Image (cartoon, rainbow, N blue to C red; front, side, top):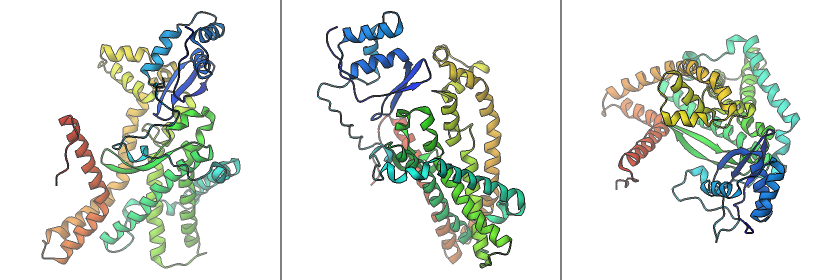
Length: 409
């Protein structure tokens, strides 16, 4: 017990009065442990011997603490440093996701900090309230899927008019997360990934768990802050046209209407707390949950009599916060499926009309110029989703065969 134990560079953040959040920022592994565990880790990081650690832990807890067992648990979590290991973060694997390959720290925190201070957040809130006010005062400016989706008489060109803005809006949303995290000095990863068959921009905010809970809201809401500004700018243009203060060509108003529709659809998606969206992350952080999504699933299985003994044991070990919130969140999740259906109903009319147009063009055969035009438009519009579907099929093949398939050619 006179030996010392070397740990990896761990973060220890208080989570209430009785727990601390311990994690390795380099690997993204974070766990919640009793507060006495934070005392033990702090002593080990200081270089104290196991005897000294045991004495400090007992003084804090008021009873003996099994230090060897705790150290063994740290090893199982990967928190112990290897013999030849340095303090430098390990290089990610070559096959790691894009956002896991390089930390993005080019922008200094002090450069972007003013954009996420109290005054800035007041401006973002004002932009959101302005947008809501415009919709209330001028209901004619509310997005109409059947009308606003198609800017031009040519449906193919109208659909393609969406592509640059949708990708710009998605990228700027993720930049909001990234910049808000950099304002706190947090390292982030940014890249392109997919969810099922949808290609998405993503920001890895794993290191957000290394800061106190109250500081996490900025990066979590940074994307919606950018969305609010962009929506306010678009609506300001539409409002100026609607009131006669601005008289641009009709195409400009049609483009603004289409982009407002796209932005509202994106923001509504992020507002669905029953999915793993930005506001879901805010909810989890505010209520002190640790594994709400898993606990919700286990509680639903128990409610419908499908809980296995192993899952029942897992549920018994869940935190009180997860159980308390999960009791009502599970039903919100079920009801939320209707919300997802309503969200998709905003897009269905547009896609149905576009697919009918494309099918008519392709039906004319390869000898027709419209055939190739329809094929080009469909490829440009659906190319990203087709790529994502290919990635999904690739992963499924890898899982079924138990190995990574070799690319053809």
